[in-house]
Amino acid sequence: MKCYYHPETDAVAACTNCGKAICQSCSINVTGRLICQTCLASGSATRYPAQSIQPARSTNTLAIVSLVLGIMGLCGSFLFSVPAWITGHMALKQFTENPNQEGQGMAKAGRILGIVATVLWVIFIVCYVGFLVIMMISAGGSSYK
Ligand SMILES: [Zn+2]
Ligand SMILES: [Zn+2]
Image (cartoon, helix red, strand yellow):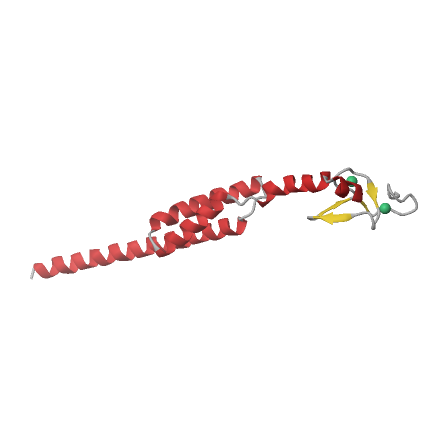
């Protein structure tokens, strides 16, 4: 295939905007997409990537919520850890449906923080309750004396 603009030159790519075959000197990389000089000059290509990249750059809200809750849960209360776990899980589910969204790392971190904090709090509560039970047994035992 030859370049649409240079019939003597071999094409190296197709313009992602108009689909014409273009050579090395015609192709221009605009935000990760190859477009031809005509499309760049007309401005239609620079408008299209802006539109297609706009949703791709949107960060998943649930991922942010999950991370914030995860951090709050770790230094606050496990009341935040369980929602962090759930929102992180929900966010990751949304990423499988819409992989263009950002914040996957945050969702993973939020979910892990949520799980870790929940497990820590459960261990803490079990130990605390266990300690109380031992105290009550020993206190009850001593009262019989
Ligand atoms: Zn083009
Ligand atoms: Zn060319």
